[in-house]
Length: 180
Length: 180
DNA sequence: ACCTGAACACCGTTCAAGT
DNA sequence: ACCTGAACACCGTTCAAGT
Image 1 (cartoon, rainbow over the protein chains, first blue to last red):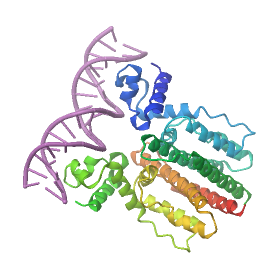
Image 2 (cartoon, rainbow over the protein chains, first blue to last red):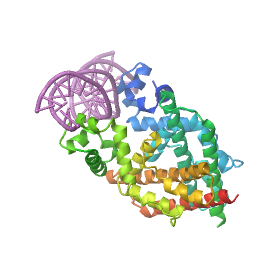
Image 3 (cartoon, each protein chain N blue to C red):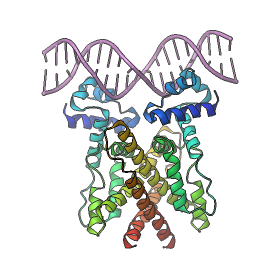
């Protein structure tokens, strides 16, 4: 029963049952412990969810100089697709500002190296993060509806295409704004 | 007690107390009725929230030919800013696919008129919708934290700037991809 | 230091029964 | 047709009390 152990248990629940069933009581059950016990390690559920988000984002490769913005965005999507409902979870944690591991840190540096002012670099990467999160939320919601059977036709290829088109737009836009 | 009456009551709760406190029991209380009564008019909470989302999006001006993509995106943001937590609510309804009034319908037509293939036009506008929703969710989350007092410094001007920069990137990207 | 037991104030949803 | 009463199976969180 450590912080890391609780986060691992939460990740297990998330993958098996989804974000809607990720309750403090269920996590505690998986650990063979009382729900109240978790509150000795985490102040509240939001903080715990932020730690889970950080653990998910830790799977992203550190952004070295050789990486392109597009490559970083694809990497972010890949990492989010490795856990059920990860995009929605990370989006929520990011919104309340409890994520310590902000996903755009590396990309901001790349843009700054290209001569962008720091504030604009952060805003530009944020725009891409919004797109990636929104797109993967859509993908994973469809995956859930498909698993329950209310939806048919998998068509993961269409998701891929939609992502690549949007990403191409964003990257072109970044270059256009930088040039202008 | 009609569908419209329930939606109005829900909008009132939303503006006063926020999405977290928008429960079936609270809506019923505001109407002087039992929570179970709502289930005669709506199948479940998700369906009701989708109706609320539609009511919010109804405030958006219909997209005529003269409107630019940027103008449409700004209009979408303005409409979302008229109700507390509207962006998060609409994003959720949109994700589960229960919104009848999809916000991108008008913009898709504009792109098709410019010669885009229908599928790509939908994907391009979806990318912009993801950005707008993500950005306004961020803005409204900050507004909430500010209201509770855990955050200081209003700085709504920075939000405006961030939105305009991202939008400029997206619109440039749309043109670049269309040209290439 | 770390966890249990038990409670508090809530949830969404169902369903017989009323009118 | 439309609503009530009462229940079911849950929530997040707190806190005295145990070890």
